[in-house]
Length: 180
Length: 199
Image 1 (spheres, helix red, strand yellow):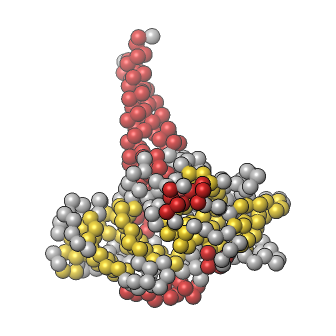
Image 2 (cartoon, each protein chain N blue to C red):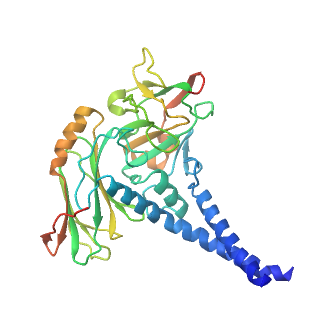
Image 3 (cartoon, each protein chain N blue to C red):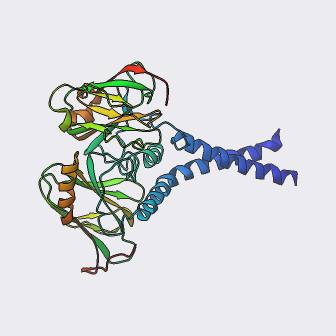
């Protein structure tokens, strides 16, 4: 019996270690896969998408609402000295600007019903600053939601979306548009 | 040599056990129900108010990453999901239902139908949800069915949905919903009307 104690302990340690490692890694892995999928479907880096209305044929993300306008911008602040300038155009109904880290956390949301919103997104570890949000991860996704439950309202939301901006800034200059 | 293989087997078995248990407990195994977890249950409508929050535990974060990616934190929106009718039977495409409710304690709300893969069902009916604007003020009703019903004010199509669920979104929820959802929220009821053969 004694000779099985060692292997049994090793098995339990491995089970516990892999269990928590898998749990810890799962959101990041799933988010990374989702980001890759979004990139493949045309969601640009540092630029808001010109979205199609969510239908069974156009849906990209699980549990999207067909009643909302979603504009996505992927960001990557890995390079030192970079930050993001984000602007959400005016919209008379509900709209929000939400930020998601690489671990899927919704680390900030700004509601902008009836007004435009402008904010800077700073890389992890940056000191707090007025009009700025510090991202907990270098990479993530920004999402604008607008209430648009009909084709007409969606077309109007898309028109409002022309004022949306998601621009990479490097040393106070707007960086060249990303290629992907 | 035998001892080496015993330890090798222990490592492999332990790793498999750890991975399998993590995926199972986080609801990440194929076919896992989105509703096996959640800390809020209001008459069958279940929610996890930790969604979107960095305070969520590892199991919640993993599950939400799979089934509710890019969901908002509860201060902005809360999401309730219902998988069964008022009698406790799973929601199925082969059946029709009456979904009814009243005003919701939120700035805007909607109820949307999703298939077992958490996607909108692959139909072209253009009847995927009902929301506060279409329902109007006060009491409202919608019929959930695979074919457009006659005489119904609102229709949510379950065509090609198989076994499905409904998600109730409450945007800009009243504070009372966060503090005490079972008291503040009177969620829609789902009465089964008819059942035919599965397509």
